[in-house]
Image (cartoon, rainbow, N blue to C red; front, side, top):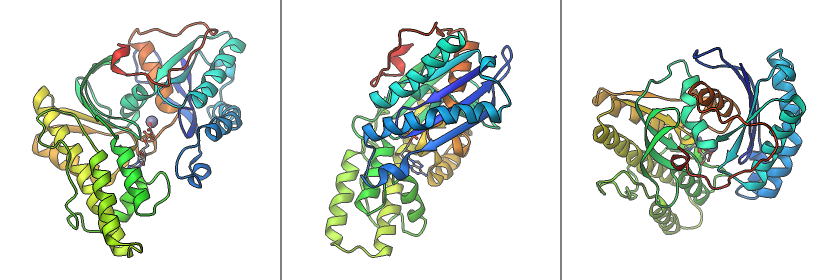
Length: 344
Ligand code: KG4
Ligand code: ZN
């Protein structure tokens, strides 16, 4: 069975081909990715109209490239999957339109996929895939959630951010110290030269007793500190702010993840989403999980941020699990706002 996956929810056009037989683990056969980061940099964030137009330019060549790399013909594809939401409406419509057009032309069914389910299941493509049940820490640019996962489509929300997501906090704080959008990875590189205890930024909701997060106050606190330091920050000051910001975000994510493991009694943690690429987060989660004698699984680094592979994989895993919502091409919709847990 061959599943073609198309991702276009935000600022990355991703296409991938995944293959599986029966209940065997799906394999990634080929993938292509185009990131729009350079294009949006000048504006300090994603410009939705530019994003949609660029997806239109990239998606057809990427589909061709992926089919060539996999040495397969489009006619061999059994199901066309695409990200139906959440994300930018115009950007989502490009992937949806491409998937529907392909499905009509090939006479094959389409399968709409939830973007966060793609992230959530992406560690199943790693060399060390998890087994169920597990706690998932989903940390993307737009979402921070802890979930109990008992199988494909069996997700229970344990807690989530009540305001900014962790990725958003990384990006906004990075901007405050003059780093380009999206600043998460750049902030974490700069943090390597700074002191994580230079500034005592708040650890919001650390002792709230629940598994919710809040990062908006942290951003305000970083903004206040940057203002206090004056107009021209030295390199050392910027590195200290970066390291202290990262320390605050990572400590909250790690402590809440450990609380989730304790509360559920589970022994496995799965980390997914762009912030899952953060080295400090990985180091501290590894150490904390070792203390709890729990295992922790990550996606391959290149599959942490948005990509088509996770969409093709999620579709393949849904098909294998019997959630066969592949439908004939035709009526298509995108869902810019779409809670993952409510879909079950
Ligand atoms: O999952 P993702 O690609 O997009 C969404 O679905 O939102 O996540 C993107 C987010 C951005 O906020 C980006 O700054 C952050 O992931 N990110 C990182 C790192 N790499 C990406 N944050 C911290 N450290 C990193 N190394
Ligand atoms: Zn994403």
